[in-house]
Length: 116
Length: 113
Image (cartoon, rainbow over all chains, first blue to last red; front, side, top):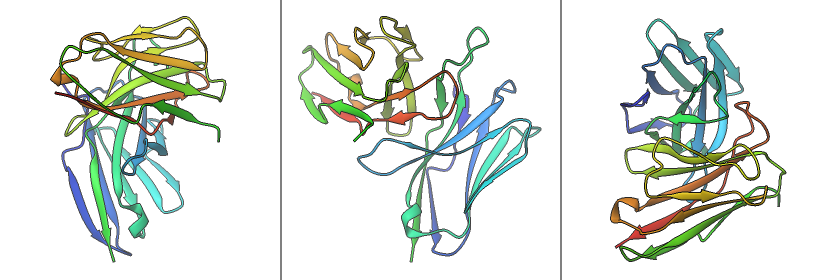
């Protein structure tokens, strides 16, 4: 059963507009969430994270919002640029015996396309 | 350039053949991981290592073996490849058990026919 869900496989946005990528999770014990970005033929790269003690984290054009009651987080990109076109993965830590050891659950990803 | 290097980048295997995927990092990282990415499935953890000489199973370990004889290398083995193992394999490393600083390799695309 998927612990982290990204239900939209793709999103298309015009340059300059806002992109909103969504992620839902099932485990209320998750205390940390991350977003990774992946270009074709490259490995994923870390983009931004948020702790469960916060409801918002901002880094330049990227903001992640967390709604713990709804078990939902979203990544906002404003303004969107063509170079943002990539697959975005939501991730949460795998806990076992109280430790993550750096392991992550990943969502299925959302392909973002930003057109001029 | 410092980072995670995966070898080979592409490979086609016949069912039943064996092969080893090599992951090498030059950042002196303790923790290393093997993930696979399948269409519509995201990345799933196969095996991981928390230091030289250690290995442990992840979410989908069946059909794979791993070894970490040297700190900088993490090998993923397929003893008898199956078409279900057709995937893109990513290796990642990190310095410690925290959640930042995950460095991924560029992936190995494996096709089993």
